Length: 324
Image (cartoon, rainbow, N blue to C red; front, side):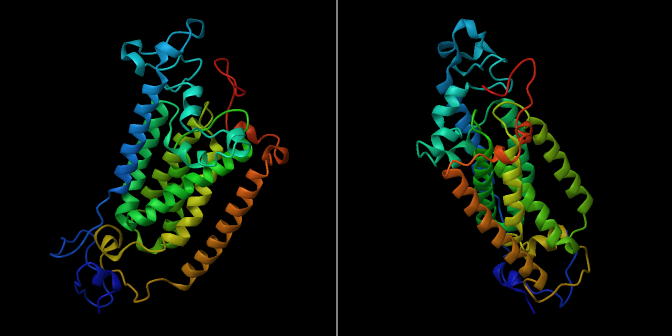
């Protein structure tokens, strides 16, 4: 009997209780998820960065006393002096003008839209390249498995979760970047891997990929304009969302890429433990977002409860401080 996934993909019948080789040829009439939301996010982030650098116009807006613009031959697209921005990017003033996350403006000037706009801005080329490589490697694979709706939800809500946690801890400087959303994809990938552990053959490779991407972004997180609070908030949000919206990849993807040949399959779409995990994760998500939003717009400062947590966001050096 064909599963629901078979019906949605063209009604191709399979041998009862078995799946074929994970690399079997595509049958005529089957529909396959073709990623498009992740490429759209990719292009959008790059476009916003180009617009940001155009608006920044370092040669015109940076006084000589502040230092020389980097790559001056780029004209108005030249980067700020390294002592202002070591990531090869625009000034803090430009990022703030275009929608960076600023606690004062969110809480006291009622600009809550910055919780979302900040995730499309990047502090520099280094920041942008690291994030976009992560988006392509992680996001494309997840969208092939689960489709654009669920991955879009994880990306956007994780970015929001990272922004909320950032605002609770960071008051004295700005925050930008898609890191929260990307860490959400990593968190969702981890929870999906855990809940569907038995259907995969390349578990070690998946774990190593996760560890590598997390390590790179955590290192960048100690630099100005990039913060690990966004990473943590996004990761936790995505991890919980993974249990809610990524309970099972679509059947066709598992047949081609995930399940070992001859693996037994079940007629049940979701198992009992998946429903339990979904309920728990959804409850924690609702409580977490409600409490976080309430604390944020009430003006609460999470640093009052954690005197050392600010070092997770920025480590001062001889070239820059963490108070500007």
